[in-house]
Amino acid sequence: MALSSRRGLQLAQLLEQEGVSDTRVLSAIANIPREIFIPDALKHKAYQNTALPIGQGQTISQPYIVAKMTELLLQSSNQPKKILEIGTGSGYQTAVLAGIFAQVFSVERIKSLQFQAKRRMNQLDFHNISMKHGDGWQGWPSKAPFDAIIVTAAAAELPTALVQQLNDGGRLIIPVGDAEQSLKCIDRKGETFKERTIEPVRFVPLVAGDLL
Image (cartoon, rainbow, N blue to C red; front, side, top):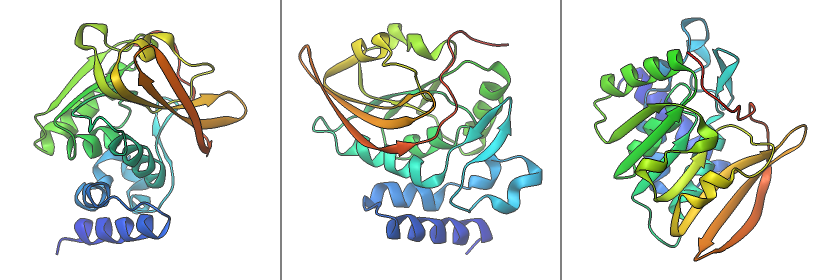
């Protein structure tokens, strides 16, 4: 077994001990080489259950939170196939999603990060991902509606545009807050939106606008 795949399996086993139980999520975590998403100086920490800086003031999320948010999408009643991700970042969460769902659309406001992430998706031979450089607060209206939306940065308040781009029966997973943040799960039933709080989290802020 290759070194990275053995470490990936160990990471998946650790996440299972932390409460992640969906085998599709654990398999994706085990099979995706996290080290390719991380700067060279930090590659030795690739399979630790921790967030790491990736430049531009951004981070690659802690594997537990990547797995938890993905699992919450899979628990949606509509069995989602078409996913919108806000905040491509390194592309690690994108790759986990692409290993599970039929279609992944991902928006990133920092052009250089988007370019690097696209290169990694090609390296991993993922062809079910569409990427856009743009403002995550606005979502991707021309591709809406989506069965599920996942946001990988904390919004000060719930972005109206994202809520409206959910399919009926769809689910939005998003961290909300400034100094104190909580992971929120919002389910759409017609024009009714049911919100529940999952757990406290810590994310970089969801910034409006895009950046070259």
